[in-house]
Structure formats: C-alpha cells, structure tokens
Length: 275
Image (cartoon, rainbow, N blue to C red; front, side):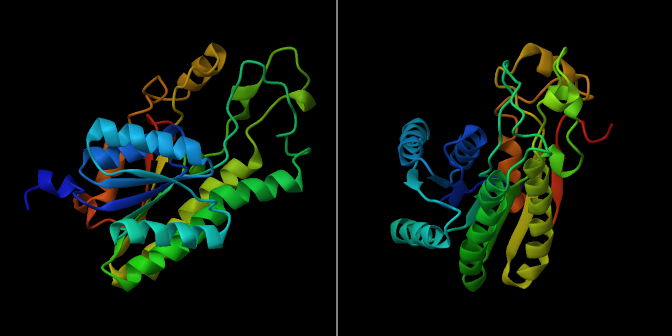
C-alpha cells in the first residue's frame, strides 16, 4: 500500500456522536470523502437524517442518520445493533458530542458562573460530554476488541490543554460577579476525554484498537466581532479556524496513515496552546 492509499477509508463504517452538530457534520463529510460510510448519531433524529441525506447525495456514498441518546447505555446498544444490522461492521467511533454554550452578542447571563453553576447543569454536561463517550466506547470498543479492532477518536479541545481565558467573555461596564464565563464543565469534560483516551489506548492495545484525541481550537461561526478580535490575539496564527480545517486531521487519525499512533492528544489550534 502506498502512502496516499493509507489515508483511504473505503467501506469502513464510522459512528459519529453529535453527528448533526457543527463539527459532527464536518467529521462525517471527511469520512465520506475518504470513501468511508458515516453514521450520524444525534439526539435530534430530524437533523441527523437530513444531514445524512445531504451527505449521501453530495458524496454519492452510503450515509445514515439515527436518533441515539448517548446518555443511555440501552440507547447506545440499540444504535450499535442497528448499525451492525445495516452494515455488518463498525470500524471507527468518533466521540464528538458535547454541550457547549455559544458566545452571543447579548452575553450577560450568569448561570454559567462557578458560584451559580447548578448540579443539574453539571450532571447534564458531564452526561453528554463524558458519560456518553464512556458508554459509546464501552459498547463499540468492546465490539472492536472482539472482532478485528478499530479506531476511537475523541474530540477534545484546546481547553483540554489550557484553562479558559475568561477575559474573552468580559463586557465593559458589567460588575465582575455579573460577567459571563466559560462553564467549568467544558474544561472538565475535555480534560476527561484526554484521560479516557490514554486509558483506553493501552487497555485494548493488544486487540488492535487504537485510541487518540484531537484538540481543536475555536471555530469561526459569526461570533461577535469583539470576541473574535480578542481570541485572535491569543492565537499565533492570528485567526480562528474555518469550520472545515479539521477534516484532513480526522481522516489521518481514523485511517491507516496513523497506524503507529495511539494514546495521543493532537492540538490543532493555530498555535494557541504554545503561547
């Protein structure tokens, strides 16, 4: 096999959690572009099916969307069974789903401040971002280990490496205790995913299951200009990522091109975590 062919994912089936979300769709497109079969798991069946149909039409490949609640092990097992019934294999799991409140121009809510953060929100965010990855890795990873192996890719964040810089969210003229912040759960979840990556990478290493993570930086999605300017100053490359700038990395991490790589967390953040 020559080097370029190692990046191919022909006929490999990839389950993507949060598959109808901003980056989930990009991951699915990357899999399809490399010849693989994306399966979009999302809490919204309508969004998952619609995006799957679009990808299938655009890339002329099999692609399905399914409603799966990754906070329920029963739902995950049912989803896995349905995928195996359709394709008779699962080769790749991309743990992408997470709760991530977006920056808006009318920031001012204080629910996300540590002093005010509720147990309900804590449990909800951990359930989606971390427990969901645990359930999916447990079910699908066990299947991989009992068969011919596979790849698990966890989508972490530059905030799995560094702390949120809360100055990014500050608004002039607002008292400190009223300022919005990046919630604690986002950091905890993303750091936890890196820990899960390292643990699983050695747990199933003898079963040909490779486990890695990528830590993307912020993606530009028309955030308020003030926020974008502040963040750009913290990034050596001077700008946020375009929404499609992680696709090639996903193909690399999920393909035989990275065959001698496991347990790693790759930062793709324009250099932000270097400063």
